[in-house]
Image 1 (cartoon, rainbow, N blue to C red):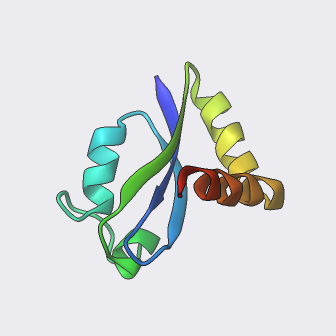
Image 2 (tube, rainbow, N blue to C red; image 1 turned 180 degrees about the vertical axis):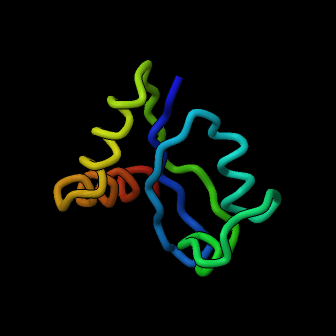
Image 3 (cartoon, rainbow, N blue to C red; image 1 turned 45 degrees about the horizontal axis):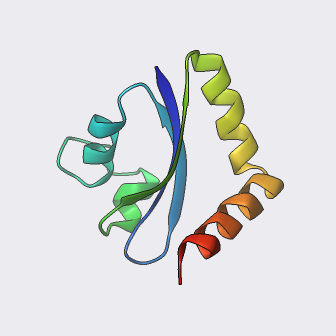
Length: 87
């Protein structure tokens, strides 16, 4: 099982990615497991929290959806989703 996820840090930065193991991936984003010092989430720090997630059976489906969410329309979808979740 693969998932596409959107996380946000305490500074309001957003990151979109995909993985087969979300729990471990989130630990990497938050610095509990080793990560590259040049990664976006390492450089932008903060406490990263899940705001959106979709699950897929195939890796190729997850990659396709990640690309969609990183497109202009996808970013608009994420922004509108965040707005709808906040009071």
